[in-house]
Amino acid sequence: MSQRPPYHNLDASRSEIRLLEILGSDIPSSIVKCRQTTVSLPDRPSFAALSYVWGDPLITENIELDRVTMPVTTKPLRLWADAICINQQDFDERNAQVRLMGSIYSDANIVLSWLEPDSAE
Image 1 (cartoon, rainbow, N blue to C red):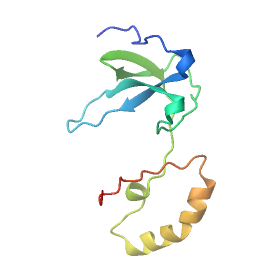
Image 2: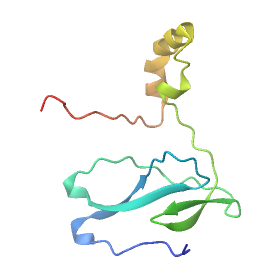
Image 3: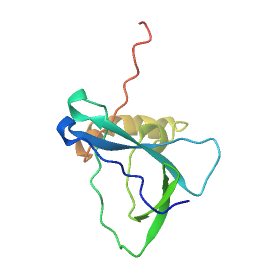
């Protein structure tokens, strides 16, 4: 795979930005696969913004972006996801964590949520 980032020109007059889509996979892989999409901010696209966290530039891992391998510095990103971080089989833990959810969400640096489309349409 090429080591050249797959950047194309953005249209500044349309306030275009690139978004990274992290792709799911049914096959365990040692490399994260992603692709870029271009959107125009006036179209009000749905996305989350993440500020780059500086790390040791000599310590990197590879990601795959549009089939191009790119090195990124390593620095852990800490996430809390209720479905993963709460033992759903332990009712005492689950109830205690539910009582903490107000604090968890208000103390988080950012809260991301997914709203499903209305299935009654």
